[in-house]
Amino acid sequence: MDKAGDVFEDAQHEVTLEHSLRALEKRFFKDIEPLKGIKLVRDVDFPARYLPEEKIIELHRNVAQFPKLSQFLIVHELIHHKLSLKSARHAEVPYSGAYRDEIRKLCNDDAYVALL
Ligand SMILES: [Zn+2]
Image 1 (cartoon, rainbow, N blue to C red):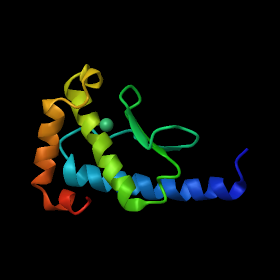
Image 2: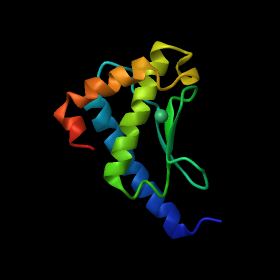
Image 3: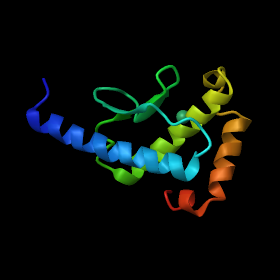
């Protein structure tokens, strides 16, 4: 059972994360369809993941309290989103050459390097 304080804190984090998501999309992925949203989840064994059918990112609620780490993870999942839009089979080989090409592109962008 969630405590009322936790629920309030999660709601605040979700507002902040949605804001970060939109800023990161605008900065690094302006030519692709925006995500449907970002959702905090608890009791999961991953820090973040992208769900291609729903086009959302799930972020572990315990990670959400670390803004820089959250932003880094959001960009990572946005790469999966971008590549999933290009190929329905992206999830089968998520860390292919196409993935590395996206990372290389980002690494030429000082704003991305500043996130690391
Ligand atoms: Zn990944």
